[in-house]
Length: 67
Image 1 (spheres, rainbow, N blue to C red):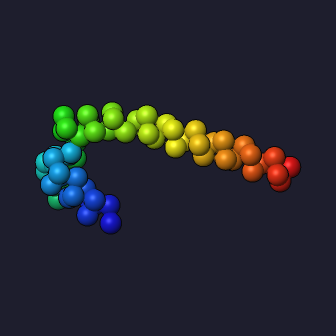
Image 2 (image 1 turned 180 degrees about the vertical axis):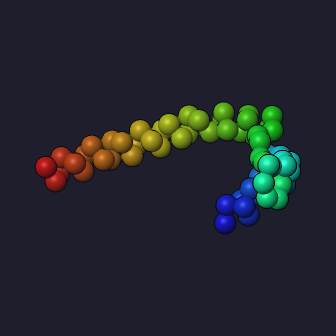
């Protein structure tokens, strides 16, 4: 499932991949963010923080119920 999402992100231009030779075994695929991917991630940071804060508040409220 992870690799399917990585392929989607790559087709959307958010990440890019390259094959990297290792000392043993086959080459592995290495992913990195593109400029568009970095901009998209930066735009999502406030959303992620707001969701985290909301979950933290929920957990604080529910802890009080079970103490």
